[in-house]
Length: 249
Image (cartoon, rainbow, N blue to C red; front, side, top):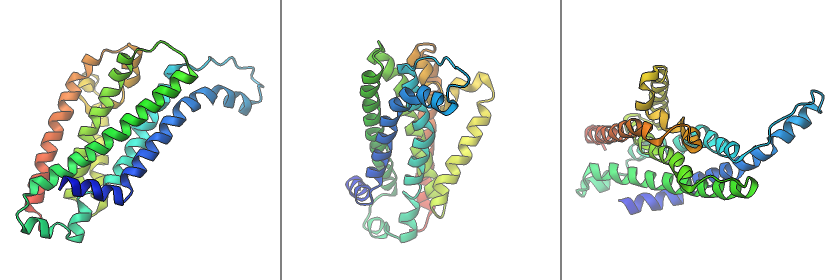
């Protein structure tokens, strides 16, 4: 079942689309950081005689995290929104289930397929950004700091993909895989208004990456958010199995 998921995602170009988009973001991040002061000066024709600070490696990483946590996550949700709903609408799981394939196997195979794609695409984009940032902005940023800032984002995908798969199983079409994650995200943003709950909120995993990279916030402060994200992912996967068990295939 897992092999079937990998073959399908390759033939439908979902993985190729995801990895291409993430690599574009990775290539653009240091370039945008490098050219931003020049673009601003040209757009204003130097009429204000602005003294803009020189861009640094942190500006490049800021662009990277901004692009991934906004456009990257949106594209991921769009690509994977129909992971389960398309199978259910086309009745492509009937033969597998009638031959004795457990439904929880379907859920876990799909989830680990999505997780593998997310991990590969995100990791490649990290190393591309890392290399180009080091080329454009020679700076002493330790590998430990880079990986510490990256880890929460990687772990956020565990929660995000479980949420997308749950929404895709609950909904009757692809919109379920989009609207339900959107609804939960809005709730999490509202919870984030309570400062005492910030470090427990999974959204902190995509909001404090630059602060961790810069060393202004220790990674250990996000441990509650990581644990909540993992626990929520397990709950969502269990809920997905329950939903699929009650769905007519």
